[in-house]
Image (tube, rainbow, N blue to C red; front, side, top):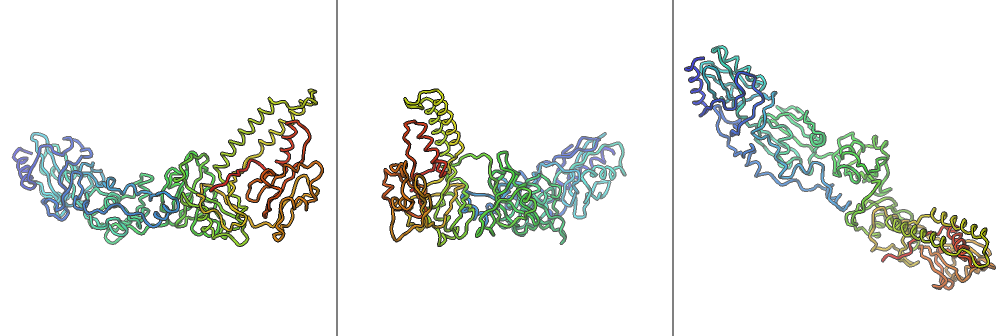
Length: 610
Protein backbone atom coordinates (compact mmCIF):
# COMPACT_ATOMS: atom_id res chain seq x y z
CA UNK A 1 0.00 0.00 0.00
CA UNK A 2 1.44 3.43 -0.95
CA UNK A 3 1.43 6.46 1.29
CA UNK A 4 -1.42 8.10 -0.58
CA UNK A 5 -3.64 5.07 -0.04
CA UNK A 6 -2.85 4.98 3.67
CA UNK A 7 -3.58 8.68 3.93
CA UNK A 8 -6.89 8.20 2.16
CA UNK A 9 -7.80 5.36 4.54
CA UNK A 10 -6.86 7.43 7.60
CA UNK A 11 -8.62 10.53 6.26
CA UNK A 12 -11.81 8.59 5.63
CA UNK A 13 -11.65 7.20 9.15
CA UNK A 14 -11.17 10.66 10.59
CA UNK A 15 -14.17 11.90 8.69
CA UNK A 16 -16.29 9.02 10.04
CA UNK A 17 -15.21 9.01 13.70
CA UNK A 18 -13.84 12.45 14.32
CA UNK A 19 -10.30 11.38 15.22
CA UNK A 20 -7.50 8.89 14.70
CA UNK A 21 -4.42 7.93 16.64
CA UNK A 22 -1.33 6.07 15.62
CA UNK A 23 -1.39 2.60 17.11
CA UNK A 24 -4.23 3.41 19.58
CA UNK A 25 -5.81 0.32 21.12
CA UNK A 26 -3.98 -1.99 18.69
CA UNK A 27 -2.01 -5.11 19.45
CA UNK A 28 1.64 -5.49 18.49
CA UNK A 29 2.18 -5.01 14.77
CA UNK A 30 2.73 -8.00 12.55
CA UNK A 31 1.42 -10.68 14.93
CA UNK A 32 -1.82 -12.10 16.27
CA UNK A 33 -3.18 -9.56 18.68
CA UNK A 34 -3.56 -10.64 22.29
CA UNK A 35 -6.75 -10.05 24.27
CA UNK A 36 -7.06 -6.29 24.16
CA UNK A 37 -7.87 -3.89 26.99
CA UNK A 38 -10.62 -1.44 26.10
CA UNK A 39 -9.66 2.21 26.61
CA UNK A 40 -12.18 4.33 28.55
CA UNK A 41 -14.45 5.41 25.70
CA UNK A 42 -18.08 6.42 26.18
CA UNK A 43 -20.29 3.35 25.49
CA UNK A 44 -22.29 3.48 22.27
CA UNK A 45 -26.09 3.31 22.54
CA UNK A 46 -27.71 0.47 20.65
CA UNK A 47 -30.38 2.89 19.47
CA UNK A 48 -27.89 5.16 17.69
CA UNK A 49 -27.10 4.79 14.01
CA UNK A 50 -23.63 4.29 12.66
CA UNK A 51 -21.57 6.36 12.85
CA UNK A 52 -21.76 6.17 16.63
CA UNK A 53 -23.61 8.82 18.59
CA UNK A 54 -23.24 9.51 22.34
CA UNK A 55 -25.56 7.51 24.54
CA UNK A 56 -28.54 9.33 26.03
CA UNK A 57 -27.60 7.88 29.42
CA UNK A 58 -24.88 9.33 31.63
CA UNK A 59 -22.16 6.83 32.47
CA UNK A 60 -19.59 6.93 35.23
CA UNK A 61 -15.94 5.90 35.00
CA UNK A 62 -16.85 2.24 35.41
CA UNK A 63 -19.45 2.20 32.66
CA UNK A 64 -22.45 2.24 34.98
CA UNK A 65 -25.69 3.94 33.95
CA UNK A 66 -25.81 6.73 36.56
CA UNK A 67 -29.53 7.41 36.07
CA UNK A 68 -30.34 3.74 36.61
CA UNK A 69 -28.13 3.61 39.70
CA UNK A 70 -29.88 6.64 41.21
CA UNK A 71 -33.32 5.04 40.88
CA UNK A 72 -32.30 1.81 42.67
CA UNK A 73 -34.19 1.09 45.86
CA UNK A 74 -32.38 0.07 49.05
CA UNK A 75 -31.80 -3.68 49.61
CA UNK A 76 -34.99 -5.64 50.19
CA UNK A 77 -36.55 -5.53 53.65
CA UNK A 78 -36.56 -8.84 55.60
CA UNK A 79 -39.35 -11.17 54.57
CA UNK A 80 -41.93 -12.86 56.79
CA UNK A 81 -39.80 -15.96 57.45
CA UNK A 82 -36.72 -13.90 58.27
CA UNK A 83 -38.74 -11.74 60.68
CA UNK A 84 -40.28 -14.79 62.34
CA UNK A 85 -36.86 -16.39 62.81
CA UNK A 86 -35.61 -13.29 64.59
CA UNK A 87 -38.46 -13.65 67.09
CA UNK A 88 -37.96 -17.39 67.53
CA UNK A 89 -34.17 -17.43 67.80
CA UNK A 90 -33.73 -14.02 69.42
CA UNK A 91 -31.13 -12.88 66.87
CA UNK A 92 -31.05 -11.79 63.23
CA UNK A 93 -30.49 -14.45 60.59
CA UNK A 94 -30.04 -13.26 57.00
CA UNK A 95 -30.84 -14.89 53.71
CA UNK A 96 -27.77 -16.40 52.14
CA UNK A 97 -26.56 -14.01 49.44
CA UNK A 98 -28.15 -10.93 51.02
CA UNK A 99 -24.72 -9.42 51.77
CA UNK A 100 -24.10 -9.17 48.04
CA UNK A 101 -27.17 -6.98 47.60
CA UNK A 102 -26.12 -4.05 49.79
CA UNK A 103 -25.34 -0.83 47.91
CA UNK A 104 -21.49 -1.09 47.94
CA UNK A 105 -21.67 -4.65 46.58
CA UNK A 106 -24.03 -3.93 43.67
CA UNK A 107 -21.28 -2.91 41.25
CA UNK A 108 -21.37 -6.05 39.16
CA UNK A 109 -21.37 -4.05 35.92
CA UNK A 110 -18.53 -4.82 33.57
CA UNK A 111 -15.92 -2.00 33.77
CA UNK A 112 -14.96 -0.42 30.47
CA UNK A 113 -11.39 -1.59 31.02
CA UNK A 114 -12.34 -5.27 31.01
CA UNK A 115 -10.48 -7.64 28.69
CA UNK A 116 -12.45 -8.82 25.66
CA UNK A 117 -12.84 -12.63 25.77
CA UNK A 118 -11.83 -14.50 22.60
CA UNK A 119 -15.34 -15.87 22.08
CA UNK A 120 -17.01 -12.45 22.20
CA UNK A 121 -19.23 -11.98 19.12
CA UNK A 122 -19.07 -8.48 17.65
CA UNK A 123 -22.36 -6.68 17.12
CA UNK A 124 -23.89 -3.44 15.83
CA UNK A 125 -22.44 -0.40 17.62
CA UNK A 126 -19.08 -1.93 18.55
CA UNK A 127 -16.04 0.18 17.60
CA UNK A 128 -13.11 -1.58 15.91
CA UNK A 129 -9.59 -0.05 15.92
CA UNK A 130 -7.34 -0.95 12.97
CA UNK A 131 -3.59 -0.17 12.80
CA UNK A 132 -1.35 -0.60 9.76
CA UNK A 133 2.44 -0.82 9.92
CA UNK A 134 5.12 -1.23 7.29
CA UNK A 135 6.46 1.38 4.93
CA UNK A 136 3.91 3.77 6.40
CA UNK A 137 2.03 3.78 9.71
CA UNK A 138 -1.48 4.82 10.62
CA UNK A 139 -4.56 3.80 12.56
CA UNK A 140 -8.27 4.50 12.56
CA UNK A 141 -11.50 3.45 14.27
CA UNK A 142 -14.67 2.17 12.64
CA UNK A 143 -18.14 1.62 14.11
CA UNK A 144 -20.15 -1.41 13.00
CA UNK A 145 -23.24 0.00 11.32
CA UNK A 146 -26.86 -1.17 11.32
CA UNK A 147 -26.07 -3.68 8.60
CA UNK A 148 -23.32 -5.23 10.69
CA UNK A 149 -20.49 -3.83 8.56
CA UNK A 150 -17.64 -1.34 8.55
CA UNK A 151 -16.49 0.53 5.44
CA UNK A 152 -12.75 0.65 4.61
CA UNK A 153 -11.72 3.25 1.98
CA UNK A 154 -10.40 1.68 -1.23
CA UNK A 155 -11.31 -1.73 0.19
CA UNK A 156 -15.07 -1.68 0.64
CA UNK A 157 -17.50 -3.08 3.18
CA UNK A 158 -16.40 -5.77 5.63
CA UNK A 159 -19.11 -7.74 7.47
CA UNK A 160 -18.17 -8.07 11.14
CA UNK A 161 -21.46 -8.64 13.02
CA UNK A 162 -21.32 -12.06 14.65
CA UNK A 163 -17.56 -12.47 14.06
CA UNK A 164 -15.77 -13.80 17.13
CA UNK A 165 -13.07 -11.58 18.58
CA UNK A 166 -10.47 -14.28 18.03
CA UNK A 167 -11.25 -14.21 14.29
CA UNK A 168 -11.43 -10.41 13.93
CA UNK A 169 -7.84 -9.84 12.77
CA UNK A 170 -8.05 -12.59 10.19
CA UNK A 171 -11.32 -11.21 8.75
CA UNK A 172 -9.93 -7.64 8.45
CA UNK A 173 -6.57 -8.80 7.05
CA UNK A 174 -8.29 -10.91 4.38
CA UNK A 175 -10.37 -7.90 3.26
CA UNK A 176 -7.40 -5.54 3.04
CA UNK A 177 -5.25 -8.23 1.38
CA UNK A 178 -7.42 -8.16 -1.71
CA UNK A 179 -6.05 -4.64 -2.49
CA UNK A 180 -2.66 -4.24 -0.80
CA UNK A 181 0.58 -6.11 -0.05
CA UNK A 182 3.61 -5.62 2.20
CA UNK A 183 1.88 -4.49 5.34
CA UNK A 184 1.09 -5.72 8.84
CA UNK A 185 -2.29 -5.15 10.50
CA UNK A 186 -3.40 -5.15 14.14
CA UNK A 187 -7.00 -4.93 15.26
CA UNK A 188 -8.81 -4.48 18.55
CA UNK A 189 -12.21 -3.56 19.93
CA UNK A 190 -12.02 0.03 21.11
CA UNK A 191 -15.56 0.39 22.47
CA UNK A 192 -18.51 -1.86 23.12
CA UNK A 193 -22.13 -1.20 22.28
CA UNK A 194 -24.76 -1.10 25.02
CA UNK A 195 -27.59 -3.63 25.26
CA UNK A 196 -31.03 -3.11 26.74
CA UNK A 197 -32.23 -5.88 29.06
CA UNK A 198 -35.48 -6.20 30.99
CA UNK A 199 -35.46 -7.49 34.59
CA UNK A 200 -38.90 -8.73 35.66
CA UNK A 201 -40.59 -10.84 38.33
CA UNK A 202 -39.58 -10.70 41.99
CA UNK A 203 -36.60 -8.39 41.54
CA UNK A 204 -35.75 -5.68 44.04
CA UNK A 205 -35.63 -3.13 41.19
CA UNK A 206 -37.49 -4.48 38.17
CA UNK A 207 -37.21 -2.50 34.95
CA UNK A 208 -35.12 -2.02 31.83
CA UNK A 209 -31.33 -1.65 32.04
CA UNK A 210 -28.73 -0.58 29.50
CA UNK A 211 -25.57 -2.54 30.21
CA UNK A 212 -22.30 -3.39 28.56
CA UNK A 213 -22.43 -6.07 25.88
CA UNK A 214 -19.99 -8.05 28.05
CA UNK A 215 -22.52 -8.20 30.89
CA UNK A 216 -23.84 -11.60 31.91
CA UNK A 217 -27.11 -12.67 33.47
CA UNK A 218 -25.60 -12.43 36.97
CA UNK A 219 -24.22 -8.94 36.28
CA UNK A 220 -27.65 -7.66 35.32
CA UNK A 221 -29.53 -9.34 38.19
CA UNK A 222 -27.17 -7.99 40.82
CA UNK A 223 -27.09 -4.55 39.21
CA UNK A 224 -30.89 -4.56 39.60
CA UNK A 225 -30.54 -5.13 43.35
CA UNK A 226 -30.95 -8.90 43.18
CA UNK A 227 -34.06 -10.82 44.17
CA UNK A 228 -36.56 -9.13 46.47
CA UNK A 229 -37.55 -10.66 49.81
CA UNK A 230 -40.04 -12.80 47.91
CA UNK A 231 -37.72 -13.60 44.99
CA UNK A 232 -35.66 -16.70 44.32
CA UNK A 233 -31.89 -17.01 44.41
CA UNK A 234 -32.11 -20.52 42.97
CA UNK A 235 -33.81 -19.70 39.68
CA UNK A 236 -33.31 -16.79 37.27
CA UNK A 237 -34.76 -17.46 33.83
CA UNK A 238 -33.36 -15.84 30.67
CA UNK A 239 -35.82 -15.48 27.78
CA UNK A 240 -34.66 -14.58 24.27
CA UNK A 241 -37.08 -14.13 21.39
CA UNK A 242 -39.82 -15.71 23.47
CA UNK A 243 -37.86 -18.86 24.33
CA UNK A 244 -36.18 -19.84 27.61
CA UNK A 245 -32.43 -19.93 27.09
CA UNK A 246 -31.21 -20.83 30.58
CA UNK A 247 -32.45 -21.18 34.16
CA UNK A 248 -29.51 -19.97 36.27
CA UNK A 249 -28.99 -20.87 39.94
CA UNK A 250 -27.26 -17.93 41.68
CA UNK A 251 -26.02 -20.36 44.38
CA UNK A 252 -23.77 -21.92 41.73
CA UNK A 253 -21.98 -18.59 41.48
CA UNK A 254 -22.17 -17.54 45.14
CA UNK A 255 -21.23 -20.87 46.75
CA UNK A 256 -19.20 -22.65 44.06
CA UNK A 257 -17.88 -19.81 41.88
CA UNK A 258 -19.30 -21.61 38.83
CA UNK A 259 -20.31 -19.33 35.92
CA UNK A 260 -20.44 -21.96 33.19
CA UNK A 261 -24.21 -21.43 32.83
CA UNK A 262 -24.04 -17.62 33.21
CA UNK A 263 -24.46 -16.43 29.60
CA UNK A 264 -23.82 -13.03 28.07
CA UNK A 265 -27.00 -11.04 27.65
CA UNK A 266 -28.17 -9.66 24.33
CA UNK A 267 -30.35 -6.73 23.44
CA UNK A 268 -34.05 -7.18 24.31
CA UNK A 269 -33.35 -10.20 26.56
CA UNK A 270 -35.81 -10.68 29.43
CA UNK A 271 -34.73 -11.90 32.87
CA UNK A 272 -37.46 -13.30 35.09
CA UNK A 273 -36.99 -13.98 38.82
CA UNK A 274 -39.62 -16.46 40.11
CA UNK A 275 -41.02 -16.48 43.68
CA UNK A 276 -38.76 -17.78 46.43
CA UNK A 277 -38.80 -21.54 47.06
CA UNK A 278 -38.71 -23.44 50.36
CA UNK A 279 -36.70 -21.48 52.92
CA UNK A 280 -34.75 -23.31 55.63
CA UNK A 281 -32.68 -21.87 58.49
CA UNK A 282 -29.40 -23.54 59.46
CA UNK A 283 -27.96 -22.64 62.88
CA UNK A 284 -25.38 -23.97 65.29
CA UNK A 285 -21.99 -25.47 64.47
CA UNK A 286 -21.99 -24.89 60.70
CA UNK A 287 -19.61 -22.81 58.64
CA UNK A 288 -22.23 -20.22 57.69
CA UNK A 289 -25.45 -19.74 59.63
CA UNK A 290 -28.10 -18.31 57.32
CA UNK A 291 -31.48 -18.82 55.70
CA UNK A 292 -31.11 -21.02 52.63
CA UNK A 293 -33.46 -21.68 49.76
CA UNK A 294 -33.99 -25.31 48.79
CA UNK A 295 -34.86 -26.54 45.33
CA UNK A 296 -37.60 -29.15 44.84
CA UNK A 297 -36.21 -32.60 45.63
CA UNK A 298 -33.40 -31.40 47.90
CA UNK A 299 -33.01 -33.04 51.32
CA UNK A 300 -31.66 -31.98 54.71
CA UNK A 301 -28.14 -33.07 53.82
CA UNK A 302 -28.20 -30.93 50.67
CA UNK A 303 -29.15 -27.86 52.72
CA UNK A 304 -26.39 -28.61 55.23
CA UNK A 305 -23.91 -28.62 52.33
CA UNK A 306 -25.18 -25.20 51.25
CA UNK A 307 -24.24 -23.97 54.75
CA UNK A 308 -20.65 -25.08 54.11
CA UNK A 309 -20.98 -28.24 56.20
CA UNK A 310 -20.24 -28.59 59.89
CA UNK A 311 -17.43 -26.98 61.84
CA UNK A 312 -14.55 -28.80 63.51
CA UNK A 313 -16.34 -28.66 66.88
CA UNK A 314 -19.70 -29.90 65.59
CA UNK A 315 -21.47 -33.10 66.53
CA UNK A 316 -21.61 -34.24 62.92
CA UNK A 317 -23.58 -37.42 63.67
CA UNK A 318 -27.01 -35.78 63.98
CA UNK A 319 -29.24 -32.85 63.13
CA UNK A 320 -31.85 -31.34 65.45
CA UNK A 321 -34.86 -30.64 63.23
CA UNK A 322 -37.52 -28.09 64.17
CA UNK A 323 -40.44 -28.45 61.77
CA UNK A 324 -43.60 -26.35 61.75
CA UNK A 325 -45.77 -29.46 61.58
CA UNK A 326 -44.13 -30.74 64.79
CA UNK A 327 -44.76 -27.62 66.89
CA UNK A 328 -47.94 -29.03 68.43
CA UNK A 329 -46.50 -32.50 69.04
CA UNK A 330 -42.82 -33.28 69.68
CA UNK A 331 -41.53 -29.75 69.08
CA UNK A 332 -38.26 -31.02 67.63
CA UNK A 333 -36.68 -34.31 66.71
CA UNK A 334 -33.26 -35.75 66.15
CA UNK A 335 -32.30 -36.87 62.65
CA UNK A 336 -29.11 -38.83 62.09
CA UNK A 337 -26.95 -37.89 59.12
CA UNK A 338 -27.79 -41.06 57.22
CA UNK A 339 -31.50 -40.35 57.51
CA UNK A 340 -30.88 -36.69 56.55
CA UNK A 341 -29.86 -37.84 53.06
CA UNK A 342 -33.39 -39.07 52.42
CA UNK A 343 -35.44 -36.63 54.53
CA UNK A 344 -37.05 -34.05 52.20
CA UNK A 345 -36.91 -30.40 53.13
CA UNK A 346 -40.11 -28.70 54.31
CA UNK A 347 -40.73 -24.97 54.13
CA UNK A 348 -39.92 -23.27 57.44
CA UNK A 349 -37.55 -25.97 58.75
CA UNK A 350 -34.87 -25.02 61.26
CA UNK A 351 -31.78 -27.24 61.28
CA UNK A 352 -29.52 -27.07 64.32
CA UNK A 353 -26.08 -28.66 64.52
CA UNK A 354 -25.06 -29.13 68.13
CA UNK A 355 -21.44 -28.52 69.18
CA UNK A 356 -19.29 -31.09 70.90
CA UNK A 357 -17.55 -28.30 72.74
CA UNK A 358 -19.35 -25.06 73.51
CA UNK A 359 -18.32 -21.54 74.32
CA UNK A 360 -20.51 -19.98 76.97
CA UNK A 361 -22.19 -16.89 75.55
CA UNK A 362 -24.09 -14.17 77.38
CA UNK A 363 -27.59 -15.33 78.16
CA UNK A 364 -29.18 -12.64 76.01
CA UNK A 365 -27.38 -14.12 72.97
CA UNK A 366 -27.89 -17.79 73.75
CA UNK A 367 -29.99 -20.01 71.58
CA UNK A 368 -32.54 -21.57 73.91
CA UNK A 369 -33.87 -25.09 73.48
CA UNK A 370 -36.13 -26.18 76.35
CA UNK A 371 -37.53 -29.65 76.94
CA UNK A 372 -40.82 -29.90 78.83
CA UNK A 373 -42.61 -33.16 79.48
CA UNK A 374 -44.91 -34.91 81.89
CA UNK A 375 -48.30 -33.46 82.77
CA UNK A 376 -48.51 -30.83 80.02
CA UNK A 377 -50.82 -30.95 77.02
CA UNK A 378 -48.12 -30.64 74.34
CA UNK A 379 -44.84 -32.08 75.66
CA UNK A 380 -41.77 -31.62 73.50
CA UNK A 381 -38.65 -29.58 72.75
CA UNK A 382 -39.21 -25.87 72.18
CA UNK A 383 -36.85 -23.45 70.42
CA UNK A 384 -37.51 -20.11 72.12
CA UNK A 385 -36.02 -16.63 72.18
CA UNK A 386 -33.56 -15.60 74.92
CA UNK A 387 -35.33 -14.18 77.94
CA UNK A 388 -38.33 -16.51 77.65
CA UNK A 389 -39.85 -17.38 81.04
CA UNK A 390 -40.97 -20.75 82.32
CA UNK A 391 -44.62 -19.75 82.27
CA UNK A 392 -44.36 -18.81 78.58
CA UNK A 393 -43.02 -22.24 77.70
CA UNK A 394 -45.80 -23.88 79.73
CA UNK A 395 -48.26 -21.85 77.64
CA UNK A 396 -46.55 -23.02 74.43
CA UNK A 397 -46.92 -26.58 75.71
CA UNK A 398 -50.68 -26.12 76.02
CA UNK A 399 -50.72 -25.56 79.78
CA UNK A 400 -50.73 -28.06 82.63
CA UNK A 401 -53.00 -31.08 82.61
CA UNK A 402 -55.65 -31.66 85.28
CA UNK A 403 -53.42 -34.22 87.06
CA UNK A 404 -50.31 -32.01 87.21
CA UNK A 405 -48.63 -31.41 90.57
CA UNK A 406 -46.47 -28.27 90.12
CA UNK A 407 -44.94 -28.51 93.65
CA UNK A 408 -43.01 -31.66 92.71
CA UNK A 409 -41.76 -30.34 89.35
CA UNK A 410 -38.22 -31.45 88.53
CA UNK A 411 -36.43 -28.47 86.99
CA UNK A 412 -32.88 -29.33 85.83
CA UNK A 413 -30.30 -26.93 84.40
CA UNK A 414 -27.00 -27.78 82.72
CA UNK A 415 -25.11 -24.76 84.10
CA UNK A 416 -26.23 -25.64 87.66
CA UNK A 417 -25.16 -29.25 87.18
CA UNK A 418 -21.73 -28.12 86.04
CA UNK A 419 -21.38 -25.88 89.09
CA UNK A 420 -22.58 -28.68 91.37
CA UNK A 421 -20.06 -31.03 89.81
CA UNK A 422 -17.19 -28.66 90.59
CA UNK A 423 -18.33 -28.12 94.19
CA UNK A 424 -19.09 -31.80 94.68
CA UNK A 425 -15.67 -33.02 93.55
CA UNK A 426 -13.94 -30.28 95.53
CA UNK A 427 -15.81 -31.46 98.64
CA UNK A 428 -14.78 -35.06 97.94
CA UNK A 429 -11.13 -34.00 97.60
CA UNK A 430 -11.32 -32.22 100.96
CA UNK A 431 -13.04 -35.23 102.53
CA UNK A 432 -10.36 -37.56 101.19
CA UNK A 433 -7.64 -35.32 102.58
CA UNK A 434 -9.40 -35.06 105.95
CA UNK A 435 -9.79 -38.83 106.22
CA UNK A 436 -6.12 -39.28 105.42
CA UNK A 437 -4.75 -36.94 108.07
CA UNK A 438 -7.41 -37.26 110.79
CA UNK A 439 -7.27 -39.96 113.47
CA UNK A 440 -9.45 -42.77 112.21
CA UNK A 441 -9.78 -44.67 115.50
CA UNK A 442 -10.53 -44.01 119.11
CA UNK A 443 -8.17 -44.84 121.91
CA UNK A 444 -9.78 -48.28 122.21
CA UNK A 445 -8.78 -49.19 118.68
CA UNK A 446 -5.02 -49.08 118.65
CA UNK A 447 -3.95 -52.10 116.61
CA UNK A 448 -2.58 -51.66 113.11
CA UNK A 449 -5.03 -54.13 111.55
CA UNK A 450 -7.99 -52.08 112.70
CA UNK A 451 -6.43 -48.87 111.34
CA UNK A 452 -5.71 -50.53 107.98
CA UNK A 453 -9.28 -51.81 107.78
CA UNK A 454 -10.62 -48.34 108.34
CA UNK A 455 -8.30 -46.85 105.70
CA UNK A 456 -9.51 -49.44 103.17
CA UNK A 457 -13.13 -48.72 104.04
CA UNK A 458 -12.47 -45.00 103.71
CA UNK A 459 -11.08 -45.46 100.19
CA UNK A 460 -14.10 -47.54 99.22
CA UNK A 461 -16.38 -44.85 100.62
CA UNK A 462 -14.71 -42.10 98.58
CA UNK A 463 -14.77 -44.25 95.41
CA UNK A 464 -18.51 -44.79 95.77
CA UNK A 465 -19.12 -41.09 96.20
CA UNK A 466 -17.09 -40.31 93.06
CA UNK A 467 -19.35 -42.62 91.05
CA UNK A 468 -22.31 -40.41 91.90
CA UNK A 469 -23.01 -37.19 90.01
CA UNK A 470 -25.28 -34.23 90.84
CA UNK A 471 -28.41 -33.96 88.73
CA UNK A 472 -28.54 -30.16 88.36
CA UNK A 473 -31.98 -29.91 89.94
CA UNK A 474 -33.16 -26.54 91.17
CA UNK A 475 -35.78 -26.33 93.91
CA UNK A 476 -38.70 -24.15 92.83
CA UNK A 477 -40.11 -21.76 95.39
CA UNK A 478 -43.66 -23.14 95.26
CA UNK A 479 -46.16 -24.17 97.90
CA UNK A 480 -47.83 -27.61 97.87
CA UNK A 481 -51.07 -25.86 96.87
CA UNK A 482 -49.59 -24.12 93.81
CA UNK A 483 -51.49 -24.66 90.57
CA UNK A 484 -48.97 -23.02 88.22
CA UNK A 485 -45.21 -22.90 87.73
CA UNK A 486 -43.09 -19.87 88.50
CA UNK A 487 -43.60 -17.17 85.90
CA UNK A 488 -40.46 -15.13 86.63
CA UNK A 489 -37.81 -17.79 85.99
CA UNK A 490 -35.88 -16.98 82.79
CA UNK A 491 -34.94 -20.16 80.96
CA UNK A 492 -31.51 -21.13 79.67
CA UNK A 493 -30.45 -23.39 76.84
CA UNK A 494 -31.04 -27.12 77.48
CA UNK A 495 -33.23 -26.54 80.54
CA UNK A 496 -35.39 -29.58 81.33
CA UNK A 497 -38.80 -29.35 82.98
CA UNK A 498 -40.67 -32.46 84.16
CA UNK A 499 -44.10 -31.98 85.68
CA UNK A 500 -45.22 -35.22 87.42
CA UNK A 501 -48.74 -36.28 88.25
CA UNK A 502 -49.91 -35.71 91.79
CA UNK A 503 -48.98 -38.56 94.14
CA UNK A 504 -51.24 -39.47 97.03
CA UNK A 505 -48.64 -41.32 99.09
CA UNK A 506 -45.99 -40.59 101.72
CA UNK A 507 -42.94 -42.85 102.08
CA UNK A 508 -41.37 -43.84 105.41
CA UNK A 509 -37.96 -45.58 105.26
CA UNK A 510 -34.97 -46.31 107.42
CA UNK A 511 -34.95 -47.50 111.04
CA UNK A 512 -38.68 -48.24 111.40
CA UNK A 513 -40.50 -51.52 111.86
CA UNK A 514 -42.18 -51.46 108.43
CA UNK A 515 -40.74 -49.42 105.57
CA UNK A 516 -43.55 -48.56 103.18
CA UNK A 517 -45.49 -45.89 101.33
CA UNK A 518 -48.76 -44.83 102.92
CA UNK A 519 -51.83 -43.28 101.38
CA UNK A 520 -52.14 -39.63 102.23
CA UNK A 521 -55.18 -38.82 104.32
CA UNK A 522 -56.03 -35.19 103.59
CA UNK A 523 -58.95 -35.20 106.01
CA UNK A 524 -56.85 -36.05 109.09
CA UNK A 525 -54.03 -33.51 108.47
CA UNK A 526 -51.35 -35.88 109.77
CA UNK A 527 -47.75 -34.88 110.50
CA UNK A 528 -44.37 -36.58 110.06
CA UNK A 529 -44.53 -38.16 113.53
CA UNK A 530 -47.92 -39.68 112.72
CA UNK A 531 -46.61 -41.47 109.63
CA UNK A 532 -43.57 -42.78 111.53
CA UNK A 533 -46.08 -44.24 114.01
CA UNK A 534 -48.01 -45.82 111.09
CA UNK A 535 -44.74 -47.53 110.07
CA UNK A 536 -44.58 -49.16 113.51
CA UNK A 537 -42.46 -46.44 115.06
CA UNK A 538 -38.69 -46.34 115.31
CA UNK A 539 -36.84 -49.56 116.02
CA UNK A 540 -34.28 -49.92 118.76
CA UNK A 541 -31.16 -48.15 117.59
CA UNK A 542 -32.96 -45.58 115.51
CA UNK A 543 -31.53 -42.08 115.62
CA UNK A 544 -34.82 -40.32 116.16
CA UNK A 545 -33.01 -37.04 116.80
CA UNK A 546 -31.79 -36.85 113.17
CA UNK A 547 -35.00 -37.65 111.31
CA UNK A 548 -35.31 -35.69 108.06
CA UNK A 549 -37.83 -35.33 105.26
CA UNK A 550 -37.10 -35.04 101.53
CA UNK A 551 -39.97 -32.93 100.19
CA UNK A 552 -41.56 -33.59 96.83
CA UNK A 553 -39.97 -30.42 95.46
CA UNK A 554 -36.46 -31.68 96.34
CA UNK A 555 -35.87 -29.62 99.49
CA UNK A 556 -34.81 -31.24 102.78
CA UNK A 557 -36.41 -30.62 106.19
CA UNK A 558 -34.37 -31.70 109.24
CA UNK A 559 -35.43 -32.43 112.83
CA UNK A 560 -33.78 -29.20 113.92
CA UNK A 561 -36.12 -27.30 111.56
CA UNK A 562 -39.20 -28.97 113.00
CA UNK A 563 -39.45 -32.05 110.81
CA UNK A 564 -41.34 -34.17 113.36
CA UNK A 565 -44.17 -31.65 113.76
CA UNK A 566 -44.31 -30.62 110.09
CA UNK A 567 -47.38 -31.45 108.01
CA UNK A 568 -46.69 -33.80 105.11
CA UNK A 569 -47.38 -33.18 101.43
CA UNK A 570 -48.04 -35.62 98.58
CA UNK A 571 -44.79 -37.25 97.47
CA UNK A 572 -42.81 -36.53 100.66
CA UNK A 573 -40.32 -39.16 101.87
CA UNK A 574 -39.46 -39.56 105.59
CA UNK A 575 -36.07 -40.99 106.64
CA UNK A 576 -35.21 -42.37 110.07
CA UNK A 577 -31.43 -42.97 110.30
CA UNK A 578 -29.67 -45.57 112.42
CA UNK A 579 -27.86 -44.41 115.53
CA UNK A 580 -24.21 -45.37 115.89
CA UNK A 581 -22.51 -45.55 119.26
CA UNK A 582 -19.05 -45.55 117.79
CA UNK A 583 -17.01 -42.41 118.05
CA UNK A 584 -15.11 -43.41 114.94
CA UNK A 585 -15.28 -40.67 112.31
CA UNK A 586 -15.15 -43.32 109.62
CA UNK A 587 -18.07 -45.24 111.10
CA UNK A 588 -20.27 -42.14 111.03
CA UNK A 589 -19.27 -41.41 107.46
CA UNK A 590 -20.00 -44.98 106.38
CA UNK A 591 -23.44 -44.81 107.97
CA UNK A 592 -24.10 -41.60 106.10
CA UNK A 593 -22.78 -43.21 102.92
CA UNK A 594 -25.17 -46.14 103.34
CA UNK A 595 -28.05 -43.74 103.68
CA UNK A 596 -26.96 -41.79 100.59
CA UNK A 597 -26.77 -44.79 98.32
CA UNK A 598 -29.80 -46.59 99.72
CA UNK A 599 -32.11 -43.76 98.72
CA UNK A 600 -30.14 -42.23 95.85
CA UNK A 601 -29.71 -38.84 97.57
CA UNK A 602 -26.73 -36.96 96.09
CA UNK A 603 -25.59 -33.36 96.00
CA UNK A 604 -28.94 -31.86 95.01
CA UNK A 605 -29.42 -28.13 94.60
CA UNK A 606 -31.76 -26.93 97.35
CA UNK A 607 -31.57 -23.23 96.71
CA UNK A 608 -34.81 -21.52 95.75
CA UNK A 609 -35.05 -19.29 92.65
CA UNK A 610 -37.09 -16.16 92.94
